[in-house]
Structure formats: C-alpha cells, structure tokens
Length: 279
Ligand code: AMP
Image (tube, rainbow, N blue to C red; front, side):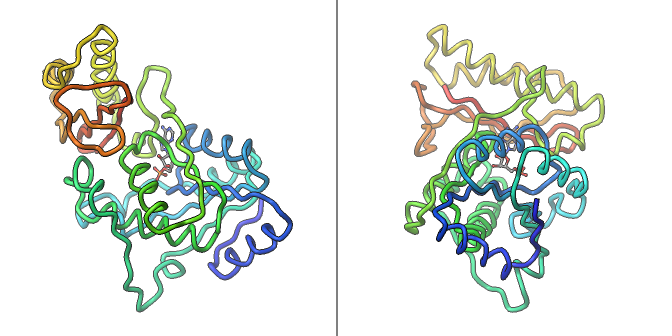
C-alpha cells in the first residue's frame, strides 16, 4: 500500500489510472478503523480496480465544544488493517495540506442538512460537504463508499454530487454492528463499561420500532413513544433527537411507510451516538 500525504502527489495519481482505463474507488474516513470501515473497503475492493482510503480528522466538521482534540487515532493499526484488506493507496494529508493559510471556501447543501444532526451540530454538514468535495476533486474517484449509519450524510452527499454535476457514483453500505447490535463507531472507544451497556438502548429502541412496523403499526407518534420507553430509567442516557422521516427528503412523517427512516442521536455518558433503521 502506498501512503500519500500531499495533495499534489495524490492528484497526479488518478490521471495515470484513468488513462489506463482503471476504475478508482474512494473510501473517506476519519480513521480509528473498525469493521464498519473495513466493510466499505471490501465493497470498494470488489467493485473497482484501485482502492483509495483517506484518513483525515476534518476539523471543519467539528463544533467548538465537540471532540476534535480527543478524537481517537491509531495510524499504525489503521495502516495494517487497510493493508490487510488490499487497499492500494492511503491518502493521509495534514490539516495544513487540506486547509492552507488563506483558505476560505466552503460548500453548503441547504435543505437536507437542516434537521436531525444538522439541527444539533451547526456547521457540521458544511464541513462534511466541503471536505468530500475536496477529496473528490483531488482523487477523481469513479465510486465513493459511505456507511448507512450516517444516513443524513449519505443523502447530503448524493445531493451534493447531483447539484454540482460531479461524475462519481455514491455507494451506501449497510451498518455493521457488534454481536449484540450496537452500531460500530470510532466513538464507542469513549464508552465506559457501564456506558457500553446503556448504549445498547439505541439498537433496542430501533428494533422495537421495526418490530412494531412489521406487525402493522404505522403511526410515528406510537412508534416513538415505545422507542422512548427503551431509554427510561437509564441514568446516563439522554435522547438528543428521535425522528421518523421520509427516506429521501428527510421530512418528518406522521405515518411511516416502507423506505422511511427512523433516526436517533443519543448522549450516553457524554458520548454522542447515532443510529437509524430504514423500514
Ligand atoms: P468516520 O470515520 O466515522 O467518518 O466514518 C467513515 C465512513 O465509515 C462513513 O461513510 C461512515 O458512515 C462509515 N461507517 C462508520 N461506522 C460504520 C458502521 N458501523 N457500518 C458501516 N459504515 C460505517
């Protein structure tokens, strides 16, 4: 695996690949890789000739009181994992390389980023849209892989690609979970053993709603009422949002239908976790 740290070197690479007719896949990450990330890499490996993974803890998508400074990092472990999955290139730029002095441009996807995480993390999706645009421009991938766990992010990126006429196919990969159901996340590393037990409430509440839906319940309020019961009595858990939304527009729905999404964000002992289920 080749490790590239400069934009100039990274940008030169796809030119030669494309002239040889090779397809390039990009898997953007913030590192501290787990099985969720690796499933993206495996899908990318299966669908393209050249797999590029990026690791960049993007400062512009973190709010001032968020966890940028303590975000977990393990470049050595990540490199070994990527290598093992047959990744061709790791793009590992510095902040200076991505946002040099004088930098002043950002990309905003306006509507779909307003609710859910967007309402609670001002500027987050602007940071995401900006860094993804930069990565697409530098790496020129034919395909880019994103996880369903960040459902709103996948919609924002699809919108971005369509609106700005970018020639890249977005592939969404299902959420990879721990054996007990907790969605894998780099931030799970923050959870104490007690937090870890209480964190299972996210999955339990989504499963509860999904089972009710399968049994015929369609009323969003009824689903969300039962979901909230899964968090009752958990001292370190605080629900940030819980919503039933149209799976394409993310508009809130009073009655759910196939293809709608139930999404939630929950603070567990100070760690913010998100998860969702598509009905
Ligand atoms: P991150 O490093 O958290 O920014 O995530 C990088 C990519 O991995 C994003 O597209 C995420 O949606 C995806 N991802 C994170 N966790 C999971 C998971 N448990 N299952 C599938 N994809 C995931």
